[in-house]
Image 1 (tube, rainbow, N blue to C red):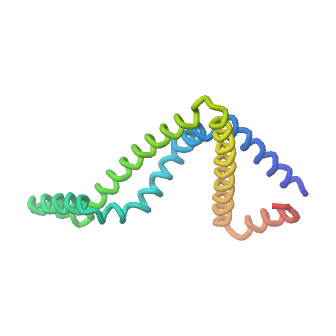
Image 2 (image 1 turned 120 degrees about the vertical axis):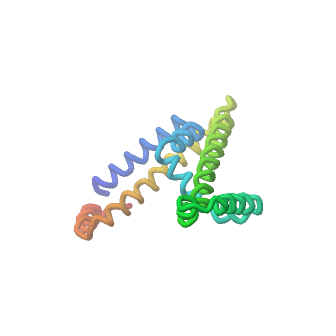
Length: 167
C-alpha cells in the first residue's frame, strides 16, 4: 500500500459518509440538478429518440408539420425543411418531456425514501452510500479517460506514480 491507496480509501470513506448523511433520495435529487441532470437527460433522449420516433402519433404529427411547412413554399421554410427542423423540434420537445419526467420521478423517490420508518431509513442510507460511491467511481473513470486524451506523456506519469497500488 502506498500513499495513493490511503488517499483513495480516505476519499471513498468521505464520499460514503456523505452518501449516508444525505441518503438516496437527497443524493439523487442533488445529482439530477445542474449539469449532471442535463447530461443524464441528453443521454436518455439519445437512447429513446428512435423508439419514440416510430410511434404512430409522433409520425403523424411530424408528417402534418412537414406538410404545413411545405405548403408555405418559401425560401425560409424550405431551408428549415432542408435542415430537418421537424426532428430538431421533436428532439427539443423530447428533452423537455424527459426533464419533466425526471423531476417527477426524483420527487417521488425522494418522498418515498424519506418516510419516517426505521427499515426505510436504513435502506435510504445504504442506497445513498451505494449511489455516492458509484458516482465517485464514474467520475474517477471519466477523469482518467479525459487524462488519457492529453497524451502518452501524462498517462505514463500517472501510471508510474500509481505503480504498486492495490487499486
